[in-house]
Image (cartoon, rainbow, N blue to C red; front, side):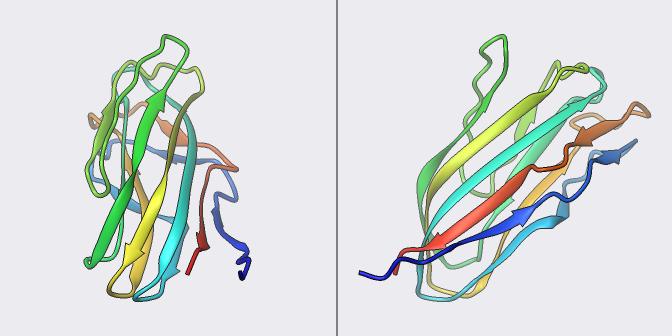
Length: 143
């Protein structure tokens, strides 16, 4: 059995979005995937921001894929939002506390392409929404 190393897309610095509710690819959190390959996947994202703006995110994958996995949003008051690959999760009542999303699963590709973390404000607002340093996506080839 071959053991493959994890490949990371690590957020190198805090990033703030103001007045923008359009999902945008995060430049740090993107990883190229080969065709006809099986990968283990994990996402961990931490954010803060304006309670009016809130936060939304999605994970995109290559057009030809078979997915297995789960996504969740968890915070101190035990909110739990689940989403599938490519679906958007809108998170409300963000306020200024740190909040986190964690997602884990298996991606089986039939075509090459990228797995990408996208994010934005849930409601466009001048108050800043911040994705924090050391948020990450990672993949490890299984076959």
